[in-house]
Length: 238
Ligand SMILES: [Zn+2]
Image (cartoon, rainbow, N blue to C red; front, side, top):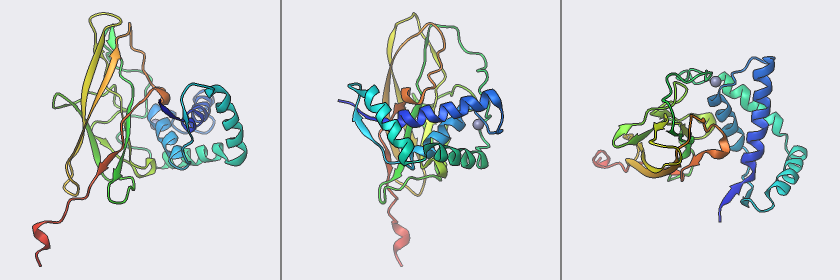
């Protein structure tokens, strides 16, 4: 059984509608790049309680019920707009904020990666951590990202409550439909916390061309990364 957070669908749809409209009309002047979309989705999701359901059966029906209910009880669009203001005001300087084109993509067939997403929490308080970077490695090396909008190591930001996202550069495959499992290591090394490593496997089937799996619902979610503050050792002898 797979638990599914209905809110992710509703929020993702609402954010994409607002951003798509802005990228057509250019009436409000905020950045509509994929990173800013993710930041806004994250901003909103972190301010609402998750609404879990078991996936697929009756989903469409419950989805629309839930959407109606949400629009009357909570002002989702208002929250999205607040997210846009916050994200625009604190735009990540590291990002190019432009994903019109990806420079030199390899020819297909390709293994196209999903966005790898997760959250970092303090194991003592379960508060999200934001003043850290997370690294994604494969075979001991930092994984190349799709383009300059994706950082590795990834700097956590306060307004997205400890969330990180990676989008690895596609890897060439021998033929369409080949399957392969990729091993990645997420790590956080910071003197204030116990060193942290988390291993994940992403299984993929190769596709004819680059497909850019940029939908929030298609993301690969890791378990929460829980960091424990380092015990104060020798310096506590006073
Ligand atoms: Zn942007």
